[in-house]
Image: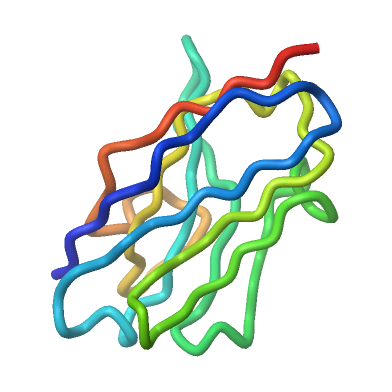
Length: 123
Protein backbone atom coordinates (compact mmCIF):
# COMPACT_ATOMS: atom_id res chain seq x y z
CA UNK A 1 0.00 0.00 0.00
CA UNK A 2 0.91 3.63 -0.31
CA UNK A 3 0.63 6.32 2.30
CA UNK A 4 -0.73 9.67 1.17
CA UNK A 5 -0.43 13.21 2.54
CA UNK A 6 -2.18 16.17 0.93
CA UNK A 7 -0.75 19.65 0.98
CA UNK A 8 -2.56 22.37 2.82
CA UNK A 9 -5.55 23.59 0.86
CA UNK A 10 -6.57 27.17 1.05
CA UNK A 11 -8.99 29.99 0.64
CA UNK A 12 -9.83 31.50 -2.74
CA UNK A 13 -12.35 33.83 -4.25
CA UNK A 14 -14.64 32.71 -7.03
CA UNK A 15 -12.80 32.66 -10.33
CA UNK A 16 -9.39 32.17 -8.77
CA UNK A 17 -7.13 29.11 -8.92
CA UNK A 18 -5.60 26.74 -6.40
CA UNK A 19 -3.35 23.73 -6.77
CA UNK A 20 -3.45 20.77 -4.41
CA UNK A 21 -0.66 18.27 -4.16
CA UNK A 22 -0.50 14.82 -2.65
CA UNK A 23 2.75 13.15 -1.61
CA UNK A 24 2.95 9.38 -1.64
CA UNK A 25 5.32 7.05 0.12
CA UNK A 26 5.85 3.40 -0.65
CA UNK A 27 7.65 1.61 -3.43
CA UNK A 28 4.58 0.75 -5.49
CA UNK A 29 3.24 4.25 -6.19
CA UNK A 30 3.81 4.09 -9.95
CA UNK A 31 1.70 0.94 -10.09
CA UNK A 32 -1.41 2.73 -8.84
CA UNK A 33 -3.95 4.85 -10.57
CA UNK A 34 -4.84 7.82 -8.39
CA UNK A 35 -7.92 9.85 -7.70
CA UNK A 36 -9.20 12.97 -6.01
CA UNK A 37 -12.48 13.06 -4.12
CA UNK A 38 -14.16 15.80 -2.14
CA UNK A 39 -16.69 16.04 0.63
CA UNK A 40 -18.77 19.11 1.37
CA UNK A 41 -20.50 19.57 4.73
CA UNK A 42 -23.55 17.36 4.99
CA UNK A 43 -22.84 15.62 1.69
CA UNK A 44 -21.41 12.32 0.56
CA UNK A 45 -17.79 12.09 -0.55
CA UNK A 46 -17.82 12.44 -4.33
CA UNK A 47 -15.49 11.65 -7.17
CA UNK A 48 -13.59 14.57 -8.69
CA UNK A 49 -10.76 13.31 -10.93
CA UNK A 50 -8.78 10.19 -11.79
CA UNK A 51 -5.48 9.50 -13.51
CA UNK A 52 -4.08 6.18 -14.61
CA UNK A 53 -0.67 4.87 -13.56
CA UNK A 54 1.20 6.41 -16.48
CA UNK A 55 -0.60 9.72 -16.48
CA UNK A 56 -1.78 9.19 -20.04
CA UNK A 57 -5.47 8.85 -19.21
CA UNK A 58 -7.57 11.13 -17.06
CA UNK A 59 -11.24 11.30 -16.11
CA UNK A 60 -13.26 14.04 -14.46
CA UNK A 61 -16.60 14.59 -12.83
CA UNK A 62 -18.90 16.65 -15.01
CA UNK A 63 -18.94 19.40 -12.40
CA UNK A 64 -15.21 20.06 -12.74
CA UNK A 65 -14.49 19.00 -16.31
CA UNK A 66 -12.75 21.81 -18.14
CA UNK A 67 -11.79 23.60 -14.92
CA UNK A 68 -9.70 21.05 -13.00
CA UNK A 69 -6.65 19.14 -14.17
CA UNK A 70 -5.16 16.10 -12.50
CA UNK A 71 -1.52 15.19 -13.10
CA UNK A 72 1.20 13.07 -11.55
CA UNK A 73 4.96 12.79 -11.33
CA UNK A 74 5.92 9.20 -10.65
CA UNK A 75 9.58 10.05 -10.09
CA UNK A 76 8.60 12.40 -7.27
CA UNK A 77 5.68 10.26 -6.11
CA UNK A 78 3.32 13.21 -6.38
CA UNK A 79 -0.21 13.78 -7.61
CA UNK A 80 -1.60 17.23 -8.31
CA UNK A 81 -5.00 18.82 -8.78
CA UNK A 82 -4.95 22.16 -10.55
CA UNK A 83 -8.25 23.93 -9.89
CA UNK A 84 -9.15 26.90 -12.08
CA UNK A 85 -12.24 29.10 -12.25
CA UNK A 86 -13.19 28.07 -8.74
CA UNK A 87 -16.80 28.32 -7.63
CA UNK A 88 -18.30 28.51 -4.14
CA UNK A 89 -19.76 25.03 -4.72
CA UNK A 90 -16.20 23.69 -4.96
CA UNK A 91 -15.86 24.31 -1.22
CA UNK A 92 -15.10 20.95 0.40
CA UNK A 93 -12.48 18.80 2.03
CA UNK A 94 -10.40 17.27 -0.76
CA UNK A 95 -8.85 13.81 -0.53
CA UNK A 96 -6.37 12.00 -2.70
CA UNK A 97 -6.59 8.24 -2.88
CA UNK A 98 -4.87 5.26 -4.48
CA UNK A 99 -6.87 3.17 -6.91
CA UNK A 100 -5.71 -0.41 -7.48
CA UNK A 101 -8.67 -1.64 -9.55
CA UNK A 102 -12.41 -1.38 -10.05
CA UNK A 103 -14.67 1.49 -11.01
CA UNK A 104 -12.66 4.67 -10.52
CA UNK A 105 -15.81 6.65 -9.69
CA UNK A 106 -16.58 4.52 -6.65
CA UNK A 107 -15.13 5.34 -3.29
CA UNK A 108 -14.91 1.63 -2.38
CA UNK A 109 -12.50 1.04 -5.27
CA UNK A 110 -9.77 3.00 -3.45
CA UNK A 111 -7.58 1.46 -0.79
CA UNK A 112 -5.53 4.31 0.66
CA UNK A 113 -6.64 7.82 1.53
CA UNK A 114 -4.93 11.00 2.60
CA UNK A 115 -6.09 12.93 5.63
CA UNK A 116 -7.94 15.52 3.56
CA UNK A 117 -7.38 19.23 3.04
CA UNK A 118 -9.88 22.06 3.21
CA UNK A 119 -10.61 24.23 0.18
CA UNK A 120 -12.92 27.20 0.71
CA UNK A 121 -14.16 29.37 -2.14
CA UNK A 122 -15.93 32.61 -1.36
CA UNK A 123 -18.27 34.42 -3.70
